[in-house]
Length: 77
Image (cartoon, rainbow, N blue to C red; front, side, top):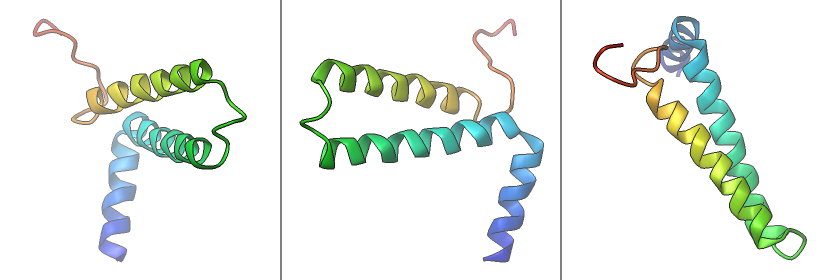
């Protein structure tokens, strides 16, 4: 287990943006799951779909910054 934590800390120091996006994505996904399970009647479907769209955008950014800290949008970058 300490080897896993060392690797995680090394990656977080090397690329804090990607690490932060993964943590935010995990927290958003857990909150969406809690809303879907326990508060499904308290939230409208349109607000929930909007929330899921936000989670999708964060997921796209997390995947785009996974390899390195820079976003590579085209071959010229």
